[in-house]
Image 1 (cartoon, rainbow, N blue to C red):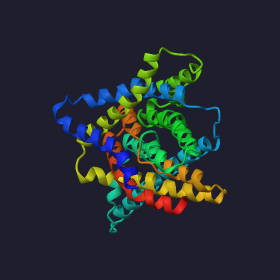
Image 2 (tube, rainbow, N blue to C red):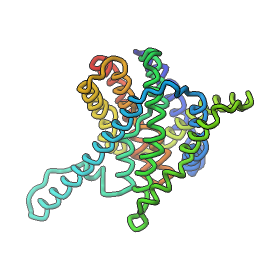
Image 3 (cartoon, rainbow, N blue to C red):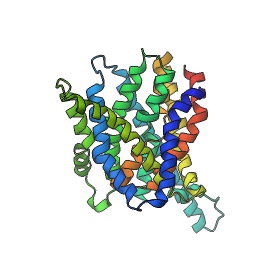
Image 4 (spheres, rainbow, N blue to C red):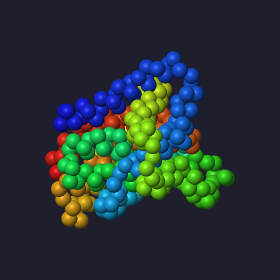
Length: 329
């Protein structure tokens, strides 16, 4: 187990730490420019390369289905949590107006009624790091026979989750109410560069590209990952101490503890067992995706909450992997 975590976390800690150190010597605008560059160029190139290299001939349809279910459960948990906080806020306000003592509600301060913060809260609770950390861990814990489940889960979440539903929600929470229309969210989803990169990658599979170009596409994947880690480190360097991590506690727990536990229970009740069930639990319980920070940069959501949730959920993952192996393997 220690070897698995070491291989998965070495590049994460190395490049994120480098971002933490370098940020103080770099222009303040660089993280925003890097985030937009990853959104419009880096991630699309990575998805184009994966679409060309991945074998879809033996598609395991259950993996994409459960990916969609996990995304909806995560989104539902986030909205229910925000609704509960608003209800508590209204109750506390009513008690204060009547002169009664109200129990302090520290979470109400951490999650004010701000669309930018609420948008990041929802994204952090539902989108997991399945492409980087997820696949790195799955390749060691899961046999080759069932590894396709993890690959299809990661690709489906990228397309339907991060750059589908994630973009829709980011566009919704990132716009002012008077300019918010459903067709704007639909337009933003259809204009996502990663979506068209995936389509182009699929359509170009029969085409033989020059050897140098094909090699460069494969190499680009290993450039995008460190850049995403660097961006995370830069944003982590801007966190305001304990308060930032405190605000990320709820979405981080929803993402790496509550969501995989629910997925594990539902899959067990539906008769799914063994490694396929373990794959779904592990992938649904991956820490908050780095893409949430990229979406926060693009749609002007709460960058601090996104960075904090990435950091805290990554730390919380460490003791949970042995738990999922014990319960669902």
